[in-house]
Image (cartoon, rainbow, N blue to C red; front, side, top):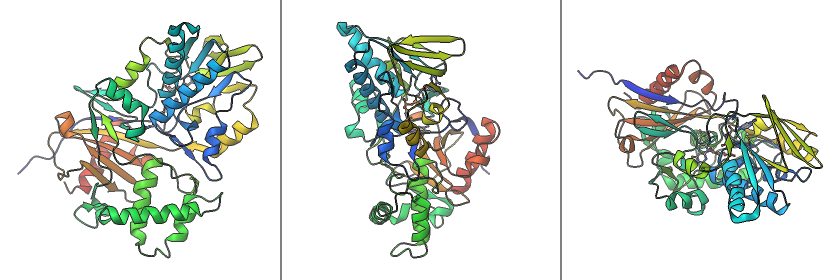
Length: 426
Ligand SMILES: Cc1cc2nc3c(=O)[nH]c(=O)nc-3n(C[C@H](O)[C@H](O)[C@H](O)COP(=O)(O)OP(=O)(O)OC[C@H]3O[C@@H](n4cnc5c(N)ncnc54)[C@H](O)[C@@H]3O)c2cc1C
């Protein structure tokens, strides 16, 4: 008889508890709109500008959107005539801003830039972690909207190896598969119909409606789809891509573009891009900024045991962390109102290595597992080929995070491995 499958190594993310993230990426809550993202970018006192993924109207929640917003904020600072610029946060937005400003410096335009970063590392919500010879991304994994992605072009310039994932063709395992395992929603045509119908219903919703309101109205009369198909589709496409309660997400704007066809992940991790962007920059690590004062003649940043002055500041911290910074004077009412309608969800990741491969082969290398309750979902990338060892990367969203993510990393790894093993019938 075969010996039981053994989990040999693991990595676990903790974005929900991380004091410098407090969630995974920004989202639009009921009553909100992409206009709220734009409202956050209005300069304050001519000297402060908020950047970061949350401020991009069409590419929020993605690395290239964050980077673009950083570059745009740098252009604003230069145009406004600021020469000494502070950047808060060394994620994609902060690095994008700082690099654009440092570029001006080397062009002899006299800009100087200092980056203040809370963590002891750069990269923010991109986080490559080594596990016995391979680097896994515990934050951002894919270069999304690949053909129109400035970081994808950079990856190509740097000669990085990128690997495409076919999200459109996951193998559904466990309860959601209708037994044994099968392709999602009986193939692409039916899923496309479901998406069209869902989008049309969301577009027609009241401005203050939540996605849950639309789904609840649809389920009793599901039309050409079954209620189960609708639920599974919403879990896979909205819950998995947001990590937020459907009762909070805006019906009209909470289902934003993102994960899709042609997305590619970077072999060797996002770290390769981050290291390139950060090289040569003046980044002060371990410096959480707690207070930002904007005066007529400049700005002051203050943290635990340090303070600094500059002509202007670009703030790139995640939304939940932004709310904790003490702004003097307080952010203008339009900013505060926009902040109140935006929020962040929680999607967590695990990397699980096993002593042997026990799951069914699937050409797309992508698997979906529904949880025991509504809105509990996980998706899995088979990284065996890239890693050279039987390895799965799992993404989890929904209420089951409360119990799955309790306790030590080892406990989380064991629980999540059990979810997949049970679904795969191992
Ligand atoms: C699990 C997960 C999976 C994801 N998958 C993808 C994906 O596949 N593709 C994709 O494009 N995007 C993905 N994303 C989203 C992507 O990671 C983010 O949109 C992007 O990295 C955000 O960049 P940013 O610069 O706006 O913010 P961050 O990367 O969060 O950078 C902000 C920086 O500010 C620092 N900071 C916070 N508070 C302070 C303070 N008070 N003082 C000083 N510094 C501070 C933080 O430490 C951080 O370094 C994922 C995110 C997560 C969590």
